[in-house]
Image 1 (cartoon, rainbow, N blue to C red):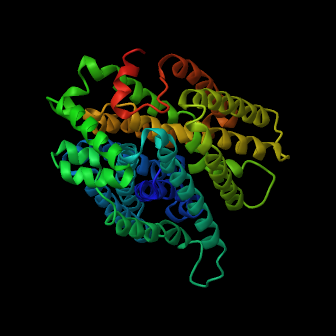
Image 2 (tube, helix red, strand yellow; image 1 turned 120 degrees about the vertical axis):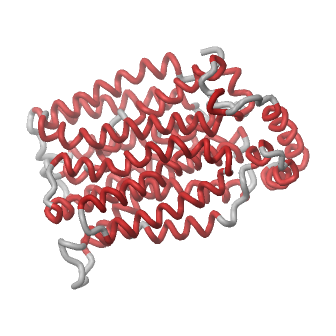
Image 3 (spheres, rainbow, N blue to C red; image 1 turned 90 degrees about the horizontal axis):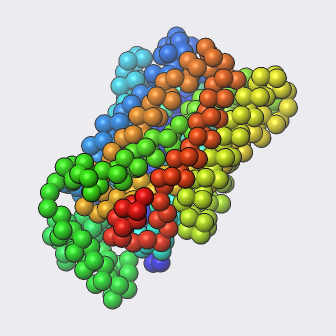
Length: 446
């Protein structure tokens, strides 16, 4: 695999870094936002979920717009929205303004979570598509960790101008720096060659493929994609609902949605609220930062696994690990065994289990299971479902935690994780090493 392919994939994946940063940065700021705006449990849920709610239209329309205007152009728009959201959140003068800017950031996140996997899958050679697709998840977990580190540093910084009433502003505005870097780097990457062929820009596509493959392989790829695109005879939006594609679209939608029902984001969005109930370890922000470290380490460990073990095996292993961890957490809270490090270890094992299974497979799988002609629109629909589920989880968790208590809350998520084994076993088909142009032959057999 050429270094050029890796570099342009990394740039595209930076949208995921901002995705992770913007969604998780709210965790450290909640303890300052709550007294500043006098927020109740429902309002805390809205502040956190505003970004997830914004992701819904961002994800839903990004694929169709990317099919029309190009993957690269839409990613540039995404980077600009990231800058606006970070600055606006930092200067927000009211609870409503903060929710609005969080929503704008969510639109950017929804777009990035759709566009980056599509772009990477369309430039990646089949043999390395799993590992390159994982760059999205690696960027997300890196962004999560950077947000936790940033929050910790800002909270501990010995500057007189920082106090409990304005620390949250600097925490939320810190995303401006990576957002600007993302914008600049996007100007240097090429457009997706598959999109260029769809727009009959064959020579431009050939030049991009020449940088990714050998000369012979490049010519073969142009011919293969051109033949596939030529068979398209209707709009992608209409085609995704035809009998030919309906099954795989539903599989992708359900798969992306239940990935959020694992409960992973209740840990990252509400880590301080959870750790406040645990009576061991260092400060809440320090423990939260450790969750980001664990997430990153296990994501890196998954790199050699996704193209070796395949997607389906990793998903099954992850569901078992996460389900058991949630049941253990429920038991620890039930018996009030919170005075030992086993609680933290269980949370870290849960995060690790997600990171090297569902976390890495999600963004690879939703971008590769759809045929070329409907990939943009179909991926949008799948990611749309992901963010709808994310919003539901984000809105309900603080209320569930307050009303039901941690025992029943974690127990519910334990049941959901174990139940996901049935869906994966029946409907998830293996895509390891399969060219994108051959995917349709696989889901037809499901």
